[in-house]
Length: 155
Image (tube, rainbow, N blue to C red; front, side, top):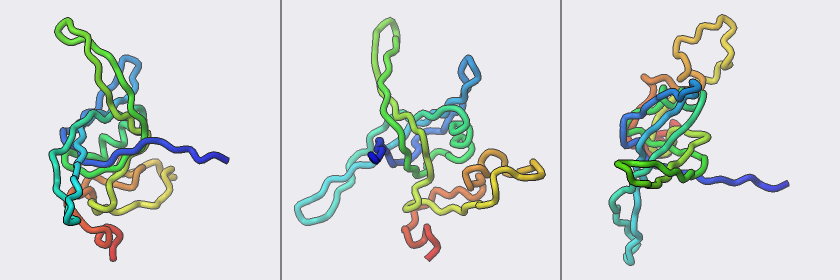
């Protein structure tokens, strides 16, 4: 059996995320993301370079959950694919690209959070945390501070 592979990206949310709905009601999450870059020096150290900035989008229910989970400054890891698109600005044809995330989560090496493992289908139908609970996060539990892996897993 072949192993399915894809593209991934990790970085930080550089803009306030936006949740919009298209003409047919399809939810769309959009955020400008930053990706940090480093140069390996001859003496074994690393020098941080300027980050690069890109567009990240998600669609449908995943977009709605991402809008509840993420804020500017949050660290993330996402899987998906790069899509090129064309548009017109000021009468000129232009093109761009965006990362279409099919899955996204907080970067466990840099964020602390708790996971709610109760079943998603609450028998009473009353989940006080709303859509964010589906992903195991509540907005109050989200933190953006830098942490070590040991701190992230509670050691």
